[in-house]
Image 1: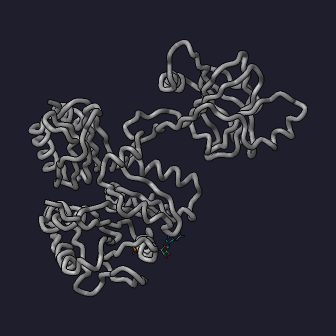
Image 2: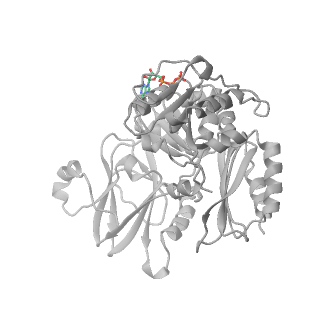
Image 3: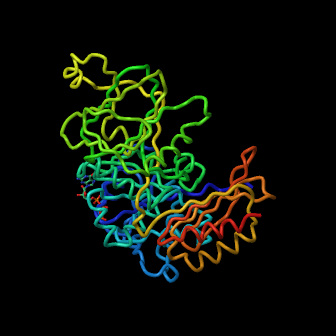
Amino acid sequence: MKEKRKVPVTILTGYLGAGKTTLLNKILREEHGKKIAVIENEYGEVGIDQGLVINADEEVFEMSNGCICCTVRGDLIRVLGNLMKRRDKFDYVLVETTGLADPGPVAQTFFMDDEVRDEFTLDGIVTLVDSAHINQQLEHSTESAEQVAFADVLILNKTDLVSKNEVNVLESRLRDMNKMARILRSKEAGVDVEDVLNLGAFDLQQTLDRRPTFLEPEYPFEWTGVYELKKGNYRLYFDDGPDPTMLITAIEFNSSNGKDLDGYAEDCVRIFSKEPKQLMPGEAISFNEVIELQLQDAGQKAFELYIDNKSTIGLFTQHTAEEFNIRLDDNKDDQTRDKKFSNITKGIDTKTERIWVAEHEHDDEVGSIALESLGNINPDKLNDWISKLLREKGVDIFRTKGFISYAEESRKIVFQGVHMLFTAEPGSEWGNEPRKNQLVFIGRNLDEDALRTEFEKCLA
Ligand SMILES: Nc1nc2c(ncn2[C@@H]2O[C@H](COP(=O)(O)OP(=O)(O)OP(=O)(O)O)[C@@H](O)[C@H]2O)c(=O)[nH]1
C-alpha cells in the first residue's frame, strides 16, 4: 500500500522578542510555492497575502505549560483535527509557540496522539535567539534553555546589536548546550526559508553529516596552519583581536615519522599544558614550546620566525586565524619593513588549515552528550534501559536522537525521543558501512559517565 504523505510541521520557538513573528512574516511573504497553515498560540496581526493563517478564535490554542505528564495537548490536537478538514488548502504547518513556553509538550503531540501521527510529521524545531539578551535570559529562565536544547535549527538573531566576537562566544555557549543543532546567524530573521522548512531535521544522518566534529575531542587550540617554507626569515602578523594575548606553538613536521596532523595535535596538547614563555612583538617564535604572544598594542603586530632548513611547519594557535587575521610572510628585505608592515594583506598560503573543537568550561546546566560505540546493540537491553531512563529522567532529557545497529536488521534503526516518548524505526540500509551506534542526549544535568556505562552494557 502506498503510504500517504504526511504534512510536515515546523515548530517555531524562542524567548520573548527573539524575532519569531519577524521570521513568520518573512516566511509567509516569500515565494516558496508552499501553502502554509499557521497555528499561533497568541493573538497577533500577521500580514499575509498568501497561504492560510489560522487565527480565528476557535483555532487559536492556548498552550498549557505545566508538568509534561499532566499537560493536556487537547487544544493543539483539536486545531490540527480542524485543519485536516481543509486539507486541500495547505501543505505545510507552522506552529508558533509563545515566548515563555517549553516547546516539549507541543513537540510531544506529534509523537503521542495516534491520529496526529497518522497525518502529520514533525519536520523540525526552529529556535530564535535574541543575541543581545539570551545570556541574561538563560540565567533567569529555564524555558529559554529548553528552547535552545530542543532546537534542530538555532537562529542567532539580532546580530546587529552585538559584536562579531560576542556572537562567536555566544555560539560556542549554545553549541555546548545543543551539539546537534544547525546554527545560523541573522539580522531581522533574514535566513533562507529552505534552511528552516522541510529540513527533515529529524533525519539524523543529515545532522551528523553537517557536524562531523561533534564527537571529536576538545583541544586547547582552535586553529592550525600548516606551511611549506624555504630556509629564511619570516614574520607572523596579527591584527587586533578579541584577546590581549594568545598561546601559540610552532612544530616542525617530519615526514619520516608517519605522524599525521592528529598525531602532531596530540604532541601539541602536551606542550600546551606547560608554563608558557612570554613573547613581545618583534621577538622570535621558537619551536616546540608554548608561547604567550603579547598582543596588547593596538594595530598590526609581528613576530619573527626563523627557518633553518626547508621544511613543513605547523602553527597551533589558541584562537582561530580569522579572529586575529593571522598572516605569515617572508621577511627578506629589511629596508622596506615599515612599508611592508602596512601592506601585508594576505601573506603566504597555508598548505592546509584545520579548525579544532576548543576546550571550554561546561557551566550551563543544559548540555548535550554524544555516545558512540562500534558493533551491534541488543534490542531488549536497549529497550529496558531507555524505558527506565526516560521514565525516571525524562523530565530532564529533552531530546534523544540516534542510530542503532541490530544484528538481525539490515537497516539502521533511527531512534528519537522527546522527553519520555520515543520511537525506534528502521531507516536506510547499512550496506557496506561499518556497524555502529550513536546516541545523543540533550538535557539538564546529564550524567555522562552513567549514560556511557549503561549504553555500553546494551551492546550485544
Ligand atoms: N535590532 C533588531 N531588531 C530586531 C531584529 N529582528 C527583530 N527585531 C525587532 O525585535 C522586536 C521583536 O520581534 P518579534 O518578531 O515581534 O519577536 P517575537 O519573538 O515574535 O516576540 P514575542 O511575540 O514577544 O515573543 C520587533 O520590534 C522586531 O522588529 C534584529 O535582527 N535586530
